[in-house]
Structure formats: structure tokens, C-alpha cells
View 1 (cartoon, protein in one colour):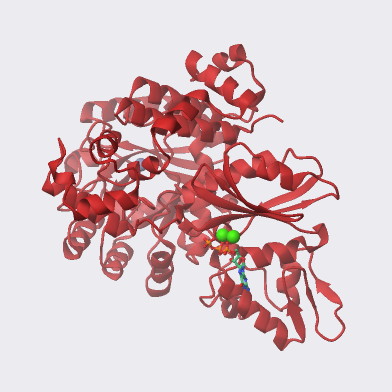
View 2 (cartoon, helix red, strand yellow):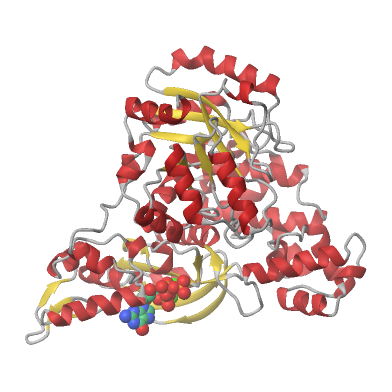
Length: 581
Ligand code: DGT
Ligand code: CA
Ligand code: CA
Ligand code: ZN
């Protein structure tokens, strides 16, 4: 069986992580080469597991040594270098590298000097004040690391995984299982399907023809590091020493009922079961049926079951037992948004930014393929260290955009920038220079630890700036590694509403920013508008918009509250309200 692209990417990601440890630094020419190859594979639909060395090397972004490793993985299911490095560095050391303030160098030092290889050991070492004596560290870094651990709630018995990582694993498992003989349908369920921020375990549902070797294939997948149990119709494994995956094989006719049951949440299931009982029906993972006669009234699709309970189908993201059943019953649950509702992307980088990886033309070509009607190019402004553009570069980019505009007649092309919100709420450049931009996203990229009142003032100052059309990833959080800034949500929503400044829903799975609870609060208590943006740094990242839209659904955000669902003229008119006031 050919290795799926998802598996190849996962193997290369592991290679990157272990190479960082081997090198003792977070970036090197080797890790950059692997990362370039990951981008290249993410951008192609061709199965790279089928390609020869020579064919791989012909792909843009894949060099000799990476090609060799891909071929090795395709034929052996593992990469020798990774296997060797795993002997030196236990996988728990990768968990340590995820803690803010802990780079590969420090993690190596912890292992060498203190024999610390996991979070538990690290917590102990901090308690004994052992970190401060290590070269390059001090009492201050010790405190900072202790703080990260407690803020993030990471401790030894905490095994939840950030959704971005869990989703990668799930996609990879599904891509592999797709090739197994007799498999009919595959879907992920559980908290992952509900778009929870962190995932306890991944739940995969499969329907298959009789005799399909699905369970055996599952427990033998590349990346399985332990089999926790397996039977005729279910199995549980651990992938990459990191996350549990549960497989359920269900009858095809019961797929809807099973998907609904295993999607949960448990609270949603219990409330629905009560609703069924009230109607003389019983609901379980096999069907909705009559209590008296046992006759099945619905089982094939989720929609059939909801309809039979006098409800419209409820999108998985809101199935948290927080009022969605009543709201669906009385018609107040917003219609779930779809990717096709969006007409533009308002936060897009190119390789003009230090961290952008596709050219302007590549980004625009891909936008046309995605049938976008408008786009704001928002490369980093000058205050962002390393990656930002000087005034001169911004002016050059403005000229380039002006020149190529006529090559993209179907696309309204805005020249914007991603401005940096300083600790006092000020932004890059000066007011006069800022008027050159058609559009501005302003984001927090530093000073995450200020107290709430300062963060609130900071955001409101930026919101009051006429150059700021959208506040990008407003909390600045990175799920599992950095808590967002603490701000008075109602004050910020109010200021944004009043000034016609939109708040971003950032589509990266490691951000999903704003959080769903804040979105829901904003919708209920204010008239603030949102922009669902990809913040793409590569053409392959446009597809992340599916997560931004899912996050909007999870926050009960109706289409009418999202500025990039507007047609081009209405959109330009909307941004003009602030710019021209
Ligand atoms: P997780 O894995 O902690 O992130 O959260 P879930 O929601 O994926 O939970 P999990 O994997 O234990 O179970 C998957 C779904 O199966 C859950 O969302 C609802 C359903 N389920 C599991 N146990 C029960 C139960 O005891 N009663 C009911 N009604 N549903 C259950
Ligand atoms: Ca689960
Ligand atoms: Ca489970
Ligand atoms: Zn950005």
C-alpha cells in the first residue's frame, strides 16, 4: 500500500522535530529543507509515495536528501534517521520543546545536565530550583518556564492534544484507511468533529464490506506505537507515542446514528435521547426507533434523525448542550456558514514577508482558482523583527501590485499590511504613510503578558486608528503553547462596533482566534462585525478557511455578521465607512 501524503508529511514533521534536537537549534539549513518539502507536498494532490527519487527531485522544493528520506519512508514505513534519534531522545522531549521558553538547546541541556526528559521531571526540577543554575538560564527564565507550564495547564497527567496536531493525525489515518479493501465510508467524530480546541482522543468511524481487513490494517498503520485493544469491530491505538485513536466499524445503514452518537457531546446526546423519549422513541448508536414496536424510524443520516425529532440538522460544532437544541427547535440557531459564503480573503501574505513562502502571483493565481472576488495582500509591516517590510519595500510592493492588477480582472486587489500593535496600541509607520494602504490588519505579536487593563487600552487604541480595518487574531493565542492576551471583551467589542472595525476569525487550527465562547458572546451582546481570514503564508494554506468557517459556526456567528461574505461593492462600501469618516 502506498503511503499517503499526510503520512509522508507527518514523518517529515517528526524528522524536523528530531533534527532540531540533534542540531541543538530550532532552525538550520536541514530543517528548512524539510519544511520546504512539507510545503511542496501539502500543495500537491499527486501521491508522492508513488514517486521515484528522480521524480521527487523534479518537484520544486524537494532536494536530494529529503527525496531519499521520502523514498525510505514509502518503502519501509519509517525513516532510519528518526528511528536512530528516537533512541537518543525519548518522544517526551518533543513535548518539552512545545513549552514556550524551551528551545531545543535548553531541552538538550535539561537531558544532559539534569536527566530531565519529560514535563513531570521538569516540574520537579523547577521546584528544586535546579534550572537557574544551568548555563544560559537564570531565576528569571526558570520562573518564566514555570509560568508557561501553569498557564497552559500542562502537567504530567494532562494528555489532551491541541486540535491542529490531532487533525493532522486524523487526516493521515483516514487517508491510509481509505486505501483498505472493502472500506465504504470514513469519518472522524468526537471532539475533533465538534472543533474542540484540545482533543482527548481521536474517534474514527468506518463502514466496510463484510470481510474487509480494516481492523488489522488500522492496528498495523505506520506511526502506531502501541495497540491498546482490538476486536472484530473496534480497536484503539496510540499514534506517534502521542495520541490515542479509537476506531469503530459500524453497519452502513446505521452510519448516521453512529456518527451522531460518537460525535457527541455526551451532554448533547443525553438531551437528544430525552427529546426522543418524550416522543415515544429511543435513540442509540444504531438508530432512532419506536419504543413500543422497536421499528427503526431513522438511522442512515444525521439529518433524518434530527428531522424525525422535529429539529433541523445541527452542525457538529455547536453540539455542546449549551442551548443548541432549543434554538434549533425554535428557529433561532443561525444557519451554519459554508466556505462558499465567503467571497474574499482579507489577511494574506506573500514571500515579500520574511516568513511568506509563495510569490504574489502564486497567491493571486491560487485565489482565482478558489474563485475569490477580492483579496487584501497584507504582508508584515516594519516593526515585526526579521519579517517586516520597510517603507521602501512597501512602496515597491505597491508598484508591483499596481502593475499586475490588470492580469487579474476578476479579483479586486487591495494593497494592505499586517500592522503590529505595540504595547501602547500604536502601530507601524506614521499616519501619512499609512494612508497609502487600501486596507490594514493590525495584530498583537509581542507583549502578551501585560495586565488586562493595559491590553484592553492597547486594543482599543489600535481599533480607534483609522488605518486599522480589521484586528488580526485578536487574542494572539496559540492553542496549547500560548494563552491569549487578557482583555475586557465587552469593551473591545463595543469599540470595534462603534468604529466599524472588524475582528478577525483566524483560520489557522493552532489559532482559531477569537475563541468560540468569545464569538458567541460578541454576537449576543454587540453588533461587532467579523472577518474570516486565512492568514495564509503559502498557497496551500488557503484551504484552512474551512476551519475559520467552522470556528464561526462554533461561535454561532451568522453570515450577516461577516464582512467578507459581502459582494465586492458592499464590502468596499463597508470598509469605506471607517476610512472616510
Ligand atoms: P475527548 O475525546 O475527551 O476530546 O472528547 P469526546 O467528546 O471525543 O469524547 P469520547 O472520545 O470519550 O467519546 C466520543 C463520543 O462518544 C462522545 O462525544 C459522546 C459519545 N459517548 C461516549 N461515552 C458516552 C456515554 O456514556 N453516553 C453518551 N450518551 N455518549 C457517550
Ligand atoms: Ca474523542
Ligand atoms: Ca474516544
Ligand atoms: Zn499574518
